[in-house]
Image (cartoon, rainbow, N blue to C red):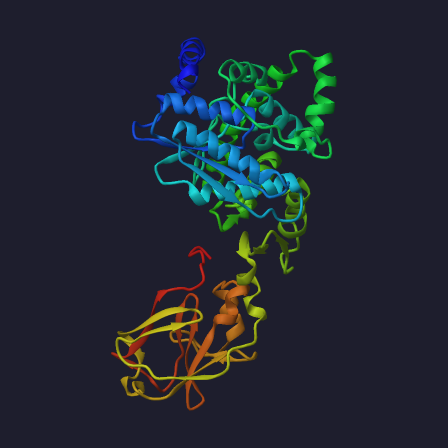
Length: 457
C-alpha cells in the first residue's frame, strides 16, 4: 500500500478536498463507518479512499448471496484486500428469498448490513453517478412516483440506519481511472453482463443506444433525481401537515380528508397506507380504497385487505387495522367463566385492564369474594343502564357508544344469579341498575384498553 500513497495523495489533493472530505467533515468526530464491499471496482476504490481518509474508523462487510459458485471466492478476495490494509472484514452469507431476484437480493443484503451495523456506525456504499441515473431510468419505466424518481440520496437518514454514498456524484469512468492509477484490484461479476437482469439490460443494451442520441443523458438524469428530491422534500412537508390535520397512523378523519384536493387525498392515502413498510401501494390499490371503502354506502361493512392490514371505514373515520385485530371477532367465543373480585384487585380482561375501586355509587361490597360470572353476548340482551330510564337493547347501547365493530367480541357481561351487574367494554365498565347497586359501593375502573380507540368516537 505504501507505494500507492504518493499517487493517492496527489489524487486526493486534486479531487477530494471539496468532495468526499467536505462530506466527511459533516459527521461527528467519533463517527465510524461500515463499508459495503462487493469486490467490484467502485466498492474497492471506496475501501481504499476510506482507509486513507478515516484510518482506524472503518470496517468492511462482504455479503455473499450464494447465487453463484464463485461468490465465496469473491468474499475471500475482499477479506485478503482488507487484511493488507488492516481493516476488519465481515463475511456474511445470506439466503435470498424467492421472487424478483434483484429485489430479494437487495433485501437480504440490507438485512445483513443491519445485523452488523453498530450504534455509532454509518453504512457507506459505493454507488456512483451512473448507478443513480440507471436507478431513475428503471424506476421511471416501472411507473414510479416522486419517491421512486428521487432515486438515491447521498446522505440517506432513515429510522434504523444512515447510509452515506460519497461517490454518488462521481462518474464510473472517473472511478475506473482512479482505481487504475492507484492500482486498486477488483473482481468482475459476470451477472453485470447478463441482460436477463433489468439493470444489466439497461446498462448493456439501453444505455449505449440512448447515450448515442443524448450524450449528456447521464448528467440530465442525475439532475432530474435532484429535482425530484426537492419535490419529495416539499411533498413530505405537505403530507405531514395533512396527516396532522386528518388523523394519525391508525385512522383518518374523513370529514377533513375529503376537504383536501384529489391530488392531496391520493398522496396522503398512499403514504398513510405505506406506514412503516418499505413501499407505497400501487395507484390501483389507493383508488380501490377510495372507491370501495371511503365511497361505500354508510351502512356498508366496507373493508379492503392489503399487505397484512385491513382498511375499514367506521362512521366518518378510515381505520388501518392489523389483520389479526380485524379478524379477532372470527375466533370462537369465550366460554362463560367464574370470577371472584375483591377491593383493589386488578383484573385483565379481553376488553382491557380494570381496577376495583370504591365509588360514590356502585355495586354492593357484599359481592366481594362471591362467585360472579363473565360471558360474551349471545344477542338480544337488554340492559338497564344506571342513570337512564328503562331497559335498552345492549346492541343499541354499544352502537350508541360507537364501539368499533372489530372490538365488540371483547365485551363481557358480569352477572350473579342471572342478574346483570354490568358490562365490561373497551370503553370502560357500564353499571347496570339492579338490587346490588348501592351508595358507597365499588366499580371496576378502566386502567387501560387492550384495543386502541379514539376518544372522539
